Length: 256
Image 1 (spheres, rainbow, N blue to C red):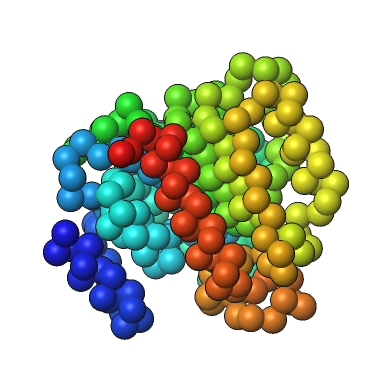
Image 2: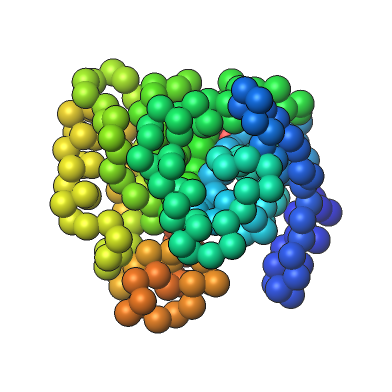
């Protein structure tokens, strides 16, 4: 309780409250550096978080801490590798493209994170969910599409396309939650339709919420407030999507 109160106070003051710790794990010979924040309750379920296109940073770590304060163990994963954190949008696009254009590589990296997640002490690893932001939302859906034994996958303003879609019912084990900006210029209506058709064919347990007047990156304050740029923060969409996600996680992870 004390930890949750202190974290909430730090958030109100605008001060980062990093409550977790860095961890390293492997995908073959590649070392990856993630971040784990633990709930105070023993045997709480685990939520994996996938970063946006510039790699794991303070934003995803703060979300992990928020999840821990809400009663979930959280593991912010690393898709790129230790020390690989693109400094600008060009480099970020190139790095993210390696995984968006190669589902085999993306799923290998995601499964390495999932295997590490199952070793985290103090977590009930029979109850695992995944969520992600922008690029991370796309990756969260990639893991779900593999039929991984996870309870749910949540995407915040993520791309919905894949080059390895689900092609038959019964593959998806995870419930799917999508938070989508209604005016997002980076996720075209055709992409949304194709995704909805895929989910219908897969007989997915899907919740899809479209937020009015929201564009890409609507949960990230660093995106500014100019919708004309295609990426901007939207306070209402941010708060509503987070509240809905906590409810979804409680339901799918069987938290009272």
